[in-house]
Length: 136
Image (cartoon, rainbow, N blue to C red):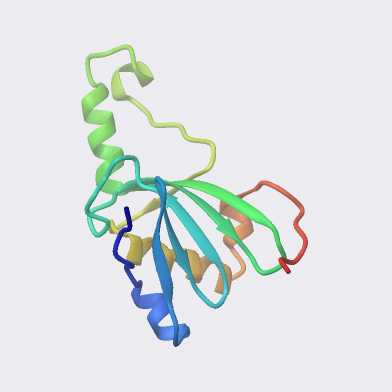
């Protein structure tokens, strides 16, 4: 069963033949500077996605990961844990490789990743999974 290809604004701006689409549970975005695979945790509306695991592949073959949350999603999680034993009743959220963004959606998160790469702050936030070697 195929899924329609969804093109991001970032990839449209940089690549004349943008590619994006589903690969099983992962939504993949290909730009001219990186490839990102998003695991949107059951969300069907990718413009509303506010919590996702992300794997990023760079041209040098290195692979990186982060868990992305919106500010609103962090607040929702904390409120849902209030009065429970989770995270001291919602007093905190701890995710080792968390990236908090203001706005939801694949396009927004892709733009944030691109900005982090362009400003050389990407490696300060994402966790490196391998040392990489260029893809053939």
